[in-house]
Length: 165
Image 1 (cartoon, rainbow, N blue to C red):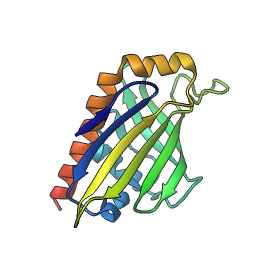
Image 2 (tube, rainbow, N blue to C red):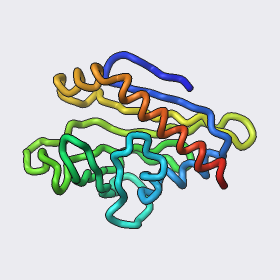
Image 3 (spheres, rainbow, N blue to C red):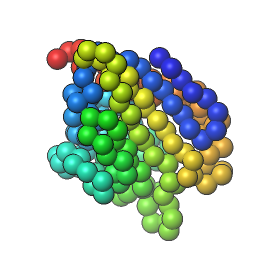
């Protein structure tokens, strides 16, 4: 497991014994996200649609002890089949910032997939906060260990899901 520290990026990588195409199919299916969520915050998708390209929006039901139940509207901003997928979350129904203009913090969740030998892939989970307001970036930096732990948990769950096939 590789972890990167410093600045508004949090990056965790892991080699998983599964082809990149198989991993991408899981990541492109929001209905599978609760299965791999290392934070325990995801409760499920609102719609059963699979991500098919840039501009898609998928809504996830979430829970956080500070906010309770809420939704996040995730706008797909990166999409390279078998290689890379990413979305920019924006507050949705039930989130305290949903009615606030410019509530989107500009952060992105990205999964980068690099084939590594026969049937294996290095998966990098990236929290990209470079577009976030400065005060929000400081929150990410001060909570870096929390982010890394949960992102590593996501990659562990992804590996376990693939191993169970």
